[in-house]
Amino acid sequence: MLCLDHVNSSVQARVVIEFDDYIPVSVTCESTGSESSVYWRTKPNAYSLLEIGLSSDTGELRSVTLTSIESGAVRVSDEPAGSSTERVVHGLPCMNLSAWSKSDVYADRFCDATLGITLLVAQDTCTLQIGAARLPRHLVDYDSVLFGFDEQNALCSIEIPLDEAMHRQTLLGFTQQ
Image 1 (spheres, rainbow, N blue to C red):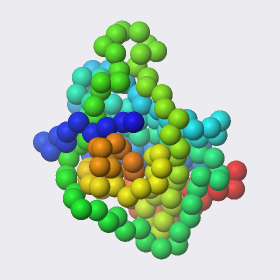
Image 2: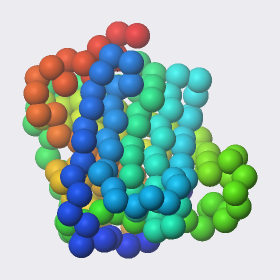
Image 3: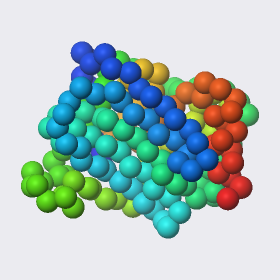
Image 4: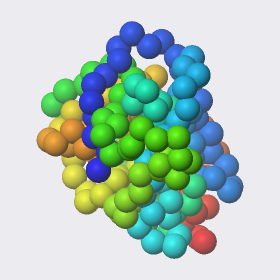
């Protein structure tokens, strides 16, 4: 599991969100850090892959890339999404890096898991559910992207705004693959 260590509320960088026909969705947090990145990946089957990039020094979240998703793991709703949670904190999530070794070996930059991925496409957002479906206990809001964490501080959801109807249509195309 990828767990929250703390929230950096002093970072003022923005996120860049991209949707396209090849990489369903990517979120990049503009960062000033020059240190290398480490990656947490989950690949529950041959058709789905989610990769999350982090600063190797601070654990600051740098990127979220849904590289591919199995069509059966995409759920569609014509209703607006509504995040219900107890607590919302504003800032950049910084994740616990204890799963990575401090070596210079390239392969050590990756921590792999086999947790399931579900993409929920609502009218105004898309939400990546990681692992078993559960509501987040608290949210971290970073430039309108909501990172949901469960009672053990494990990342369990990422809610991304759909600013344009074409973004939703792009994601709906993955239900027909």
